[in-house]
Amino acid sequence: SLAAVSREYRSGIITVPSDVRSLRRVDLMLASENATGRLTGVVKDRQGTPLADIQLALDGAAEPVITDVTGRFTFPDAPLGSRMLYVRAIGYQPIGQLVEVRADANEPLEIPFDRIVQIEGVTVTEKANVRLDRAEFELRKRAGFGRVIDSTALARFPNLRAAMQQTPGIIVTQRQGRASTEFDIFGRVGCRAFVYLDGTVTNLDEVNAIPLENLAAVEVFTNVAFAPARYQPLGDNCAVILFWTRFGLRP
Image (tube, rainbow, N blue to C red):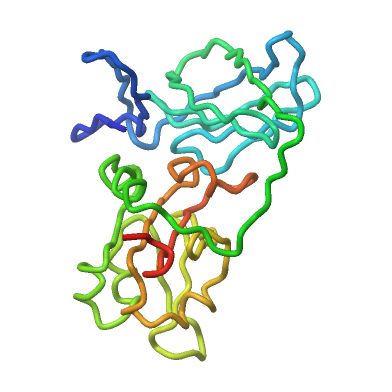
């Protein structure tokens, strides 16, 4: 991922997919931070049929939008510049697309969206706990989509709340009427963060009860679009926090 920033202008955070090419050119358009425009378009399947109830999230936009019965969508106050547009729906392959939002009239986008191929005779079951392979964890850490607090960094703090408060991009508050070490986590726009423990969705009551020495790492994604696909809840655009215990993160 990359972004361009100057004293007055900036682009969004752009995801560059990996492939076998050794060199790639990416042109970025920068704009003033608070400047907005109007971005519209339509989502269709490969046969050209408009798709309703498809969620689209635009980097820098306050809220995601949903396509109407004609497959059309509108971001009325889209931040200007190069941005990533993420398209998601249950049963479809999620996509991320680079778009340029301009102050003048933007050409409507036409986005093709494919269903996920379903294999007959395969049963998928959910496990109570998912052990994350260390190699996968290190790959995400190097990719830099989120901020990682490993066990070495955690050991420098007296408690987990103190460690989380030093993480930019999220808001950590003490729980009223509870112990000083107990906390809540919110995204930058005030929404409550999604929390996972060893790969399973949970709440902060369970996280607050874990001794600091039992945690192996914490992954913080300030926007759901940057989290791994399996941890991207539909219908929201808030932060995602992954807590891994020493059991959940394999050596």
